[in-house]
Amino acid sequence: LDGKTLACIVWNHPNMPWDATKLLKVSLPEDVLDAKSSNSFQDSTVIVAGHDDDTSIIQPLFHPITGDLYYLSDQTGYYNIFLDGHPEHPVLPMDADFGDPAPGWMLGQQGVSFLKDGRLVATFKRDGSSVLVVAKVMEWTPGPLAVEGDEYDTRDGLPMQFEGVTGGTTEATKNDIYFLGGDASTATSIYKWNLETKGPAEILVCSSSLKFPESVISVPQQIEFPTTLGNAFGYYYPPKNDNYKCTMEAAPPLLVKAHGGPTACTRTSLNAGIQFWTSRGFAVLDVDYGGSTGYGRAYRRRLRNSWGIVDIDDVCNGAAYLVKEGLADENRLCIDGGSAGGYTTLGALAFRDVFKAGCSLYGVGDLTALAGDTHKFESRYLDGLVGRYPEDEQIYKDRSPIESVDKLSCPILLLQGDEDKIVPPNQASMMHSALVKKGIPTCLKMYKGEQHGFRKAENIEDALDSELSFYGKVFGIKIPGAIDLDIDNL
Image (cartoon, rainbow, N blue to C red):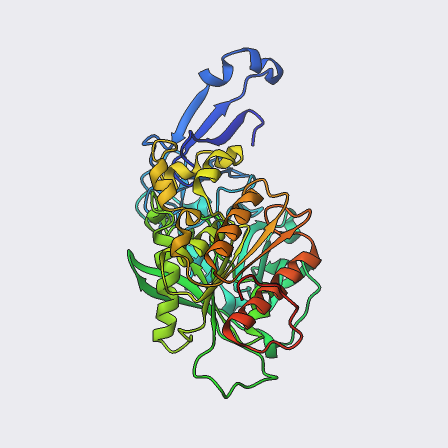
């Protein structure tokens, strides 16, 4: 703020930012250009938080008027807001995570901000929807009594999901709030909302020109279901297309989705890739399995040394819960996921017998290959998710779907980019060859020029059409206009 003090987050391998970090405050030397050749930084560095090496500190921010340093810490079990010098009392204590979805993956993420007059603005989630809180922190006396905050949500004109909140920079716009957000029928957009006038938030710019009639938009419903380590969460999208009415089945086919990360979460803004399925008669369950962000530290840590166990249990138990509730047909359960979600997909198909078919999009089939061939940021990520490599190599092999193809017994579609640097294409090829050899219906599509996550519109469209055609053939569903798909062993 004064040009002389730097606040930064640091961490040591094998930790990731959401595991354990330290918040440092550094007094910069007068001549910053000479700092590289001196001990100035080291001599003037103070550890503000994270002394115990078991707390995640993220998103430091200086107050624009007082100069005080605020930050997020999960020391209470949730990412709460703290003020430098008062580590024992959160500013807004609550059993909810501030910091926006999936914090720690990118530079510049900021779930807390300040308005021009010094009020703090932040977001958290309650019952699956975002909540905005505004608090007069300059009037707060640090102590056990929390600062009072005003809360706003969809009832005040805000969208179902929003993040990245910031305020206007002039006196005339001091009550204006800007953020990224969206809902089931609106793609991620930049919104403007006024604290005084309230009313429906105004969309300034939308990331997509796609518009769909409400008659084909399925609105997600957050569900909580029992699983191995307690309860888990997800968003259920019922089939929705008012142009058609099904009279032939008691429950629809279900597509379970496993998000990537795995230390991340699903979103509820318009996802054409989900509405594609619900408008065609499928129900969708988008699972925030144990290890997902946004549900507190204990939930996020469920995946510690348990990736390939907890996540698989949760996607399977989520599907079983919907079958029990009469919301899904147990004979037409399928699952898909990309990247880490693709690993969960392959693991669920290899190590459980819940699903009847699945689709892996650039998914991890061989954990040992991933451990030895990935980028710097995630180079020690698996230490905390699986175990140390190569010391725990046997655990890696035991949890690698490629090592358990003998347990696979249902059709699998593999979609892969040929320039993927994170999940090498040879993993999909190895899995495909093993499935063909065993006589299991399978198909591998290698997309030229694609990397980790498809970017070209024609390939994204083809991937969806291919998966729909695949399930149509597997489940005996007549798909009008389905693309021709060459499936081995079928």
